Length: 95
Image (cartoon, rainbow, N blue to C red; front, top):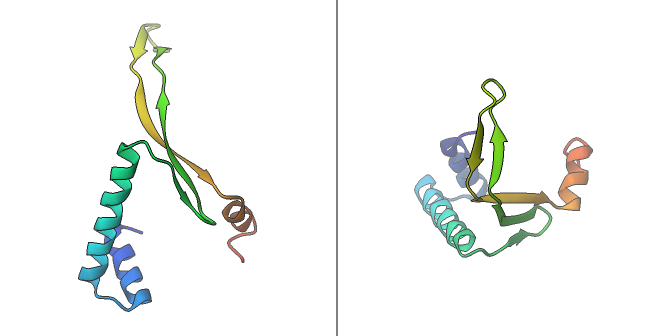
C-alpha cells in the first residue's frame, strides 16, 4: 500500500475528505519526527514502542578485499511490537 492508497482508505473509513486526511497524516508525521529528534520514546497502546537508539562506531571488513573500514556512530529508529499485536499476527491477524 502506498501513501495515496493509505490516505484514500483512511479518508473513506473515517468519512473525511482526502485533503483533510492528508493534512492530518502530515501533521502526525511532523509531530512524530519532532518527538524522535528530541529523543523521546513513543508508545502506542496495543501496537508497540518506537525508540531512537544510538549505534556505536564499529569496524567492518570487506569480504572480497579484506579491507577494514570504520563505520561511524549513528542514530536509528527501533520498534518493539506489543505482546497483543505479536500474538494477533501469530494467529494470522484474527482477533
